[in-house]
Length: 102
Image: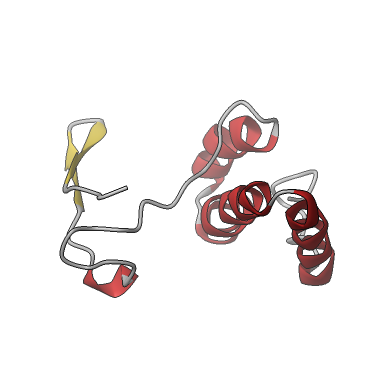
């Protein structure tokens, strides 16, 4: 991830090399880092509002939190387009409704 939320995204090749090197020692660690960066941090950096970037990226890029992607559902397997879990805004927070199988 870039040093500042306003900086351009990291070079994809550098990210791929980093993930590859981590995965040589531990594939699970490489997958965790790839998911954290690619499916959590990068969408916030690319599409998030300035408020979201200020709120979430510092805790995600300093190691205080790890981003995730809750994918597998009972009726969808690993097909993200068939997921049924929903997030509903209630006041100032979201309520998640759905289930995962792992």
